[in-house]
Length: 151
Image (cartoon, rainbow, N blue to C red):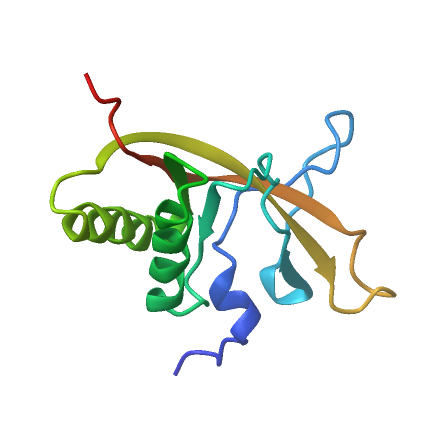
């Protein structure tokens, strides 16, 4: 019979030895002894026509916000940003906007990789080692939804 796994250890992949700085020898990390805290991603500059899509907000509310920005006449373009799991939702929002405009809107998509930082905090500060950080990469998409210039 296998040992029961804590919810924390299931979310932390088994890693090679982790080092807190380059001068110290590698330290073996036991995932059960640490709590994973995911930091928020670094914020890109926020303009009035930027929409950051996430999976917590209702899809229709995000779509309505984008439509309102475009229909207000204040912006000829908006940028829809999605990170990780929200990439599919960002693409869907951009395609819904284009379909709703009967082809008047055009799309230009760029992808990127964003470096994220996680904190590993010891469960028991007395017995476990010191807090550590690790970095990981996540995919992102940036879609420009715009009215083309009339020729």
